[in-house]
Length: 397
Figure 1 (cartoon, rainbow, N blue to C red):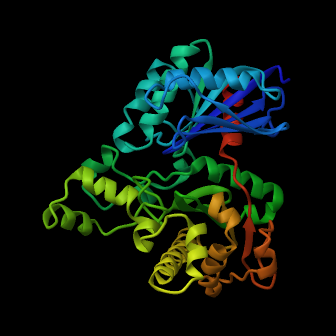
Figure 2: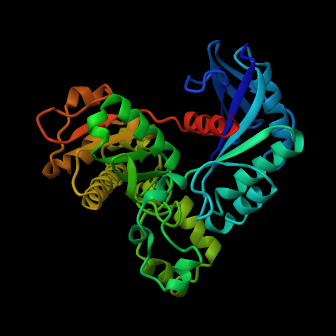
């Protein structure tokens, strides 16, 4: 049993992911990974580790009682064969605003600053705040660290961050921030290990999951990204609309009579691939259904084609921002496991020098380009939890 653990907490819209890392091995792999899915009733903590996969019923608390949930989860994690005493907890926090340009130890002051950013990320930030408060209530002796998804993009220029709106609004914080930064930071590091010469150049990383975005890097630093002020921006996603003419919002308000809550629900939960297909926001389902015949198959194909079109379109935009294109990296659930999506996007990028090897792409190989064209194409699994643990140990050392 590991003597001490760094435990990471990564909240999603309906799940909370955990990972335990041996404190004594700062760059080592996770000792175990776990997830609680609130769509399951009663909720269970599903754990994968050296002993295989196990599920532990969570009897205490509820989604509205995170202190009860966390009390039991921490007890389970410490009692696991691969577990141990928790030394500190690191949280993924979506929004760091202008205040946080790197990881931060959580104090009363920093927690207040994180909570003040709730209006900038109303669907994500409250969950992180609630989890931090829950841990502080049940285990006040534990050090807590916040790792911010926006921090990686701090290297972007003021021009890249600015909207063409009155300066007063910009000064109040209405600007482009970018997200998925922990994933991009991890991939930038892994690319440096896999292909150091490529990592020095002009790279677009495609983080494609239920939430999706692209980031253009030059020399490993963020120059531009598709998500801006909110996690709605950029690519169409599972159920989020992606980039949208603001005139559509005015139309929904003025002509259709929708209020803010209805529009929020429409854009976050009923749009994207789900809205276009009318079937599902899951690309696995859509790819399968697209092979059938009839109107539903056409709708599924249209959703997939739209997704690939925007991946390619935004890659070209980012190539302009970074002054060319040396490599594309696919990551996250869709990027790592969906050859059809990668092939569709890359086909539209042939004019930029992108060509993939169908066999390597089909087996999700690490490098999938044909080697005949100038742009390298990689598939690299991301690990946000590893990044959180690394930042946590650096602050607690």
